[in-house]
Structure formats: structure tokens, C-alpha cells
Image (tube, rainbow, N blue to C red; front, side, top):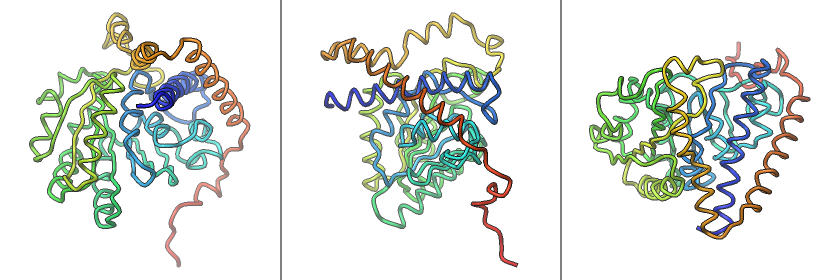
Length: 319
């Protein structure tokens, strides 16, 4: 990996982290139009997986989509607008925090747990029929591995050898329940074998490991070897959602222990060991914050969609 690539990855993870922190502040001011689910702590998964993708590849996500969308190409300015329900967002403010579509970057998300898995199978089927060599990545959480959509989507993807990479972000909790209390097969990647699928469990806070694994699995899916499965073990630093009483089910000590494994801090150590200076990284971080502040300020000046615009992209049968 070149020096420029490493700095680009560090910048993207920093952008995700600051964006999340700013969104939480906006949510506490009741400016975000709906529920907000923080992604902080899981940035290496989104950046590492999407580093292996090309423009024509697609990504499906769920109710914690901001990191995935940024990694696929959505801008922070567009995402601020979408979070705030303003024109200028990727779905012109109509989708909101969990329901947007970024057509130009082939990104789709929805708030129903596990729903993206069967959608990804459908996209994979379309891509296989098109024969252009594109693949679909499906991000979902550990809780979604217990849904009916998980089993239906994985089964069909395997039967039809669809070009899909399933990425389970195991952040230790399905909302407020510890993952080992509701998943019978552990690690979760074991479930891939039930569908004759290659499954691997990796440290989702190790960016270089995520990049390395993603390149292999994406290439396997792209070359016709059928669907692949990655379980990325990580941790969400923030609450499940803004206002979640998180200390009723986990301790401050547990969170602090996981913060020692912060993917951004770990990658920063690697960069410093590679000869990149601390002052370079500090300046990069300041530049990210400046840009995000500008984008947030701009987004807050944008108009809300009108009632008439709410149906701009709805298909209505002709009478």
C-alpha cells in the first residue's frame, strides 16, 4: 500500500468519526429528523471492505449506514443534509438517517433489521445476469444473523452462486443484548458453512487485516466463485441510538477496554512507524474538522423538502 493510500484511509476514518460526533450533537439538539445510530468504533470495517470495490459495485446497509455510505463515495455534505432532512442530501432529505439511496454510488440502506440481505441477493442476481463483473457487498449486524432474511438470502446466494460478499459487523451487542446470549453458533462465520459458503472471522479493528481479507473475498466473488462471508469483530463506542440507556447493559470499564483497540488509533501507530509524522496527521485531522464544519453549516441553511416534493420519486400508476 502506498503512502498516499494509507493517508487517504486515515483521512476517511477520521472523517467518519468526526461526522458521527457532530451528528450526535445535532441529534441532542433535535435537529436530526429521526433516530440516529452511531458508527464510531467500526470505521475500519467500512473503509477496509469498500477499498476493494469499484464504481459499478453496489453496497447495501442497515440502520447504521453513514460509514458505509461515506466509504462508498457519498460526501459528508450530502449526508449532513440527509440526516437533517434537507434538500441537497443523497435522497434530497426525503430518506432521512436510515432510508437513503445514493444512486450515483450504488448505495442502498433501510432500517428493517436483515432486510438488506435478501435485497443484496437480488442485486447480485441482476449483476450476474448483466455479466459486467460487478459484485454487491451486504453490511449487516450480528443481530441480523438471526432473521429469516439472513437464511433466505444466504441460501439463494449460494444456490445461484451470486457475486455477493456478506459482511457481518459483530459489534458485540444486538441492541442491548450481548451477542453470545442470542447466537447459537459462535463465531457467527460458522453459519456460512451451512450454505456451502466460505466464511472467515477477522479483527474488524485492524484496518490492514480488513483490507487484505476484503481484497481476497471480493476477487473470489467477482471471479465467479460464488458468495463469500466475512465476520468482522468490532465494537460500537457509542450507544445503540441517541438516548439509549447503555449503562444498564454494559459498563464504562468495558467501553474503556475496547477504546484501547480503537481502529483509528491503531492505524495511526502503524503510520507513525512507517515514517509519517504526527504533525502531518494532526494537520490532516484539523483539515477534516474544518471541512466537516463547513459542510454542516451549509447543510443547516438548506431548505426542507415540500409536501409536493415528497412524491417526486414515487411511482404512481396512470389512471
